[in-house]
Length: 599
Ligand code: GDP
Ligand code: MG
Image (tube, rainbow, N blue to C red; front, side):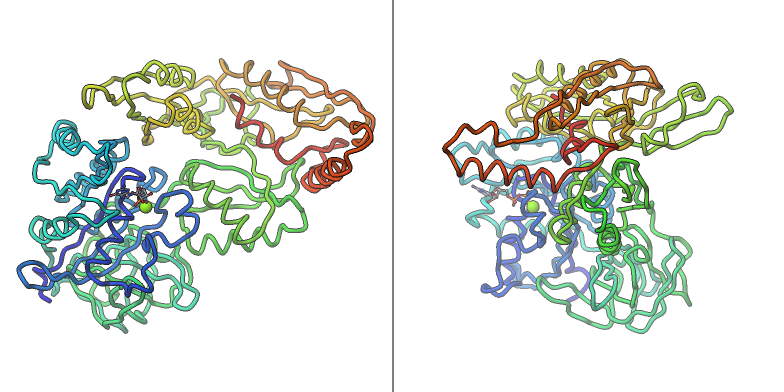
């Protein structure tokens, strides 16, 4: 099949608008998957992704579509992660394409990530093909959504196919538009090799597998390749196309192709997303634009609940990192929690995904400390510091200036919730920027919000303030000067390092109050009285006491109900298992999370 009949495209959408379902229909229509292997949502192949309803890693498949003109076309469908934490990976995936199918739910209209993803696609210079999905639903309003696309995004949408990815209605129209509207790839197969790595993952047989888009040049099995950002050389073991359920080695890839390269690369770190592959003996002059190393934005401590599992935790993190170059970790020790790791993540979702995988795939019982963003501190002697761990926050008297990361946030919601949303954002130290109507009853509210106000529970709070109707997207917009303090918690007179956190001065008192109250409720009564104190730089600003108690939990059950007694005993056992000793006090595991959810 000649180059002119290659179509490289992505599907972009807000979460739940039907991207994965549409991808499944396209796989079906191209008979890429034998029916017995056809499972829902082939492209999301991890359980976790299914549960979170998002695509975490970009993937690509090569399909052959026989169009109405009777000719065969190669479709390279490049899947993108659907969440803001992975925006960089989204933008690399889009850089591998010439077109983007923009799926919009006919019952919902444009949402925050619809727009965020569309901007990324437009930045990459892609042809954008709107598709209206879920028209089988009674509440679908395709005309309204078309008008929204024209008004808000500013691209024509009258000819957008109206489809049901669920029933398969009008899917062929989408395929035909891809054939006719997405331009074929440009590029010179005779020029020096420039191949963009837009995804990579670890395979226990092949090592790191790089998913690549060749912009120029040709690569063969046996060639010595050179990674332009990391500087490493490797010999190509295999290259070819990724089919829906298998590798198809071809021995050669050339300009315009999307495929895979394996080269006995031991770690994903050596085949980084965004890097350019060239040939060692005939290198390209320049790498493709846009490479940057993944920048962790959110940090937290991860500790094994059982200290003896520390080596297991280290092994598990090393294994996860093989496949996730954005995950960083280094050993740390906590007085309260013992030996663990300080881990860096792209965002809160990334953190949750890693935590869940550690627990589920590696059967580890974990204690995670409150997530922290990275603060920029200038000391009075002029030295600059990046602080990602409250424990390392310098003494207030030595700080000349403190800066915190600020996010540019867009919230999309029905206009009836504007009041609630503004109240929430104001409470989170947001600075209102502007508000635009998307249509008569939906708005786009633009705020600048400190990142540390977002990383705890902003998503949850936003949902509860809007009954789930709002969508949200943000990007980092630099650092701003701020009045920050470190809040320490003392239990029975001992500081618990894992409970310290950094907070804006104005919010410290209220937070301290809530926290000591929460801890008072979380800490089971013990044989002696336990004072709980919150302090800033040695000054106590809140205090509560856990009263001493008799030890027999069964004393509460008067007589009879034996099953209730059993339950209580079991509960007590479970609680013990997850206890941490801090000085002389037993702290339940979830006390460490109590800093997060206070509202
Ligand atoms: P993604 O998050 O964009 O990948 O969305 P999914 O493909 O996972 O779809 C989200 C939900 O919408 C799933 O429950 C789908 O079954 C459902 N869905 C997708 N397309 C349609 C459609 O055309 N009609 C209806 N009724 N439901 C759909
Ligand atoms: Mg999906």
